[in-house]
Image (cartoon, rainbow, N blue to C red; front, side, top):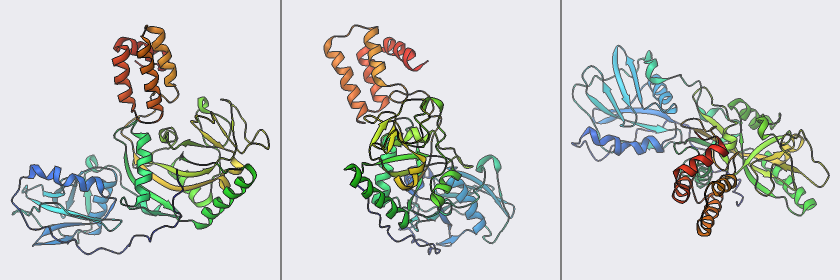
Length: 423
């Protein structure tokens, strides 16, 4: 993968943005159509910093306390939020971009400005009679705890030292997002990125580039790759502020020496398993550039913590087809630069056994051939599928469907039970 430019664009403005322009007019419409029309705003927007509602033919700012309540719900992906303002109950529907008076049932459109200063306005405006105008100076906001979830203690944009927020339209954001989702969607099709932040520490970037030149001069090639590093929120903050410290905490079955572990570009889900969720259910993974130099094979269970000889710089479970790159702790801060932090939410448990992870696909294909006699053309199909899956052109779901077509449901199920403990 080509190295990206290290020159960051100017940071987004932090000042309050004027109310967005009105759509072309208040139109007669069905509320049923609002979800499909406005859902894209919910998906595209980064964290809102300013919320407004429509009244008297203009956009009116909610108070900071209301905005904080709505921001929390947005960050937690809670589209329905109930709040009481001076004794009046309101229901906020962020996907439909509506605020509903719970007493009268009347609705008004809402809009917001996100932390990158982009305005998100509903396609059609709703301004129904009978709506009780909220007192925007009201400081006492009571959230329904059964709807909103836990409160955010701080804005996500403020917690990462030496980083800036990328706009979803930035080319760099798109490249990192595509690489992350390409690997993650094989194990979780509903994974959702919340934000991506970019390193702006020029000294750290320059030190990495200097190390790259040194390694190239001694080895003939610096062997730079990209990899993913998973950890808790606090560990990520420490790495960004102070550099890599302690070795990675790896399950015993995946130990290939003692050092900092990064999974290859195509396998972000391995590092995601090492990333603890924060108080809001969000995980964080660090997108790194790594100087590998000469890589040596390290046996599983090894307690090696430095190169076995002067000929090597780093380790791996399999240098030709790696699951893990292992950078020895004393080299971590010179050989790794944390380029970006990807904050995301997964839909469930990704720790279940999966084909191509701890359980190589080749084992499954060989087991299928043991269980059933296939013509040579079908055997060739099996190994063509193996190649397609390994190069990423076939998802696990598509792979299993094709295996069923070749071997049949009973044979595939039996093989998976024997190889990966599938029930």
